Length: 308
Image 1 (tube, rainbow, N blue to C red):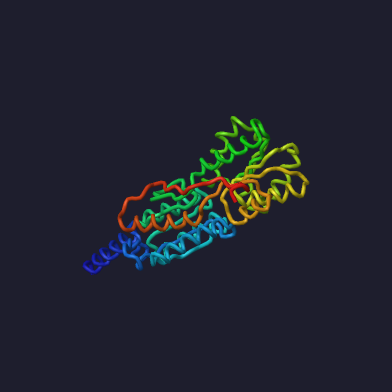
Image 2 (cartoon, one colour):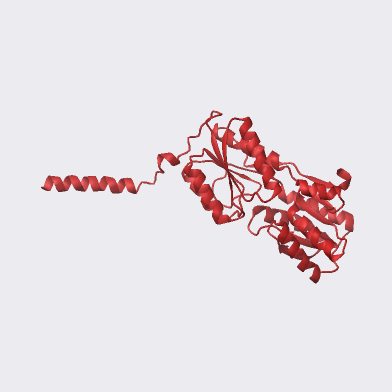
């Protein structure tokens, strides 16, 4: 009887130790496949209700197809909690690498750290993660882009021109960086009469701009952290009967068409498809054991009607 009890105690100890193991389950470990055709990557996009991120996704899909890499795309719908759950789902599907375009740079950090514990490399696109090991951030130089917008306004309207700033999603690195670059110039050369978040959304850009126009009827220019908000702002300005130059950021198709039509004044144009392509290349290089730069910049260009 004592031998049976002792044996049971040993078995229970083994079970408990196994249950307490910090090792991830085998299905969740990245295979780190180096050969094309064996690699599976997951792409989590902040929202596909924005032409810029649709182009970014298209760049990922095209480059993955070219390299014979399987890609799974999920849309966070600008919901940081959903994005974290989406990333968990991608991990459970056994992806070898994660490409993440964060909705919120702080909120995504836990998901990045979860991937780190499973040895799944993470590459971020357009926006960074505040914490966790990110192998590479593929993005435009948002600080430089913000400066370009402010410098353009100074050049066109002169020193101390009154400007409204429409900010992106609070907490997103692109919001912080574009705002920083803009204020590096604007705080010295311009009069920023109002700054308010419109969450990178066209409808919110319209609503916020309507309200700000009422409180700032003498505003001379608008800088929006993305084209969607800029296009919304233009609707509000047109409805008010005013003629106020608006500068956006991204260079999406709607914005470029608006510039051609003489509505949007300018945009700091990114290359979202190129960002997507470069992110896939970076993930492949990491999986093949190559060293990649922590920050991989994509070129920017200020586009006006004269450039069309």
